[in-house]
Length: 163
Ligand SMILES: [Zn+2]
Image (tube, rainbow, N blue to C red; front, side, top):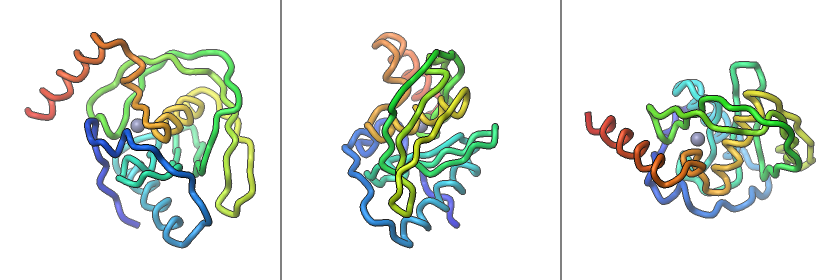
């Protein structure tokens, strides 16, 4: 397993369209293992393929409440309730901001063997599912904020990258 380099805010590959995963291959097994390894090494809660420069609909989630999953061509079916909590992103290191997310989500997900499953997530797991599925749509969590707040975050982020 290899820790992969995570690309950061401003890299166009985070905004590219991601294509669905086709037939499962041993290369994808290796990629998923590397993505879990990278998530742990960076103390994250998950990682999407575009963050390692690959524009495919694949992500991993591994939260400290024990839930761990490989997301393949996932789609949110339903959301319920809301929660406000700090969110961060391995592609925007050093930035954590409170963000409202659904308390529960139901996700349609493909398994490596091609079968479909429905995944239910609550709390931190629901937040991580939403965050990673957003990445697959080219959306970063800071884009939920208005232009003023976003530019404040961006300045803080850039200053900290320089220091
Ligand atoms: Zn992220």
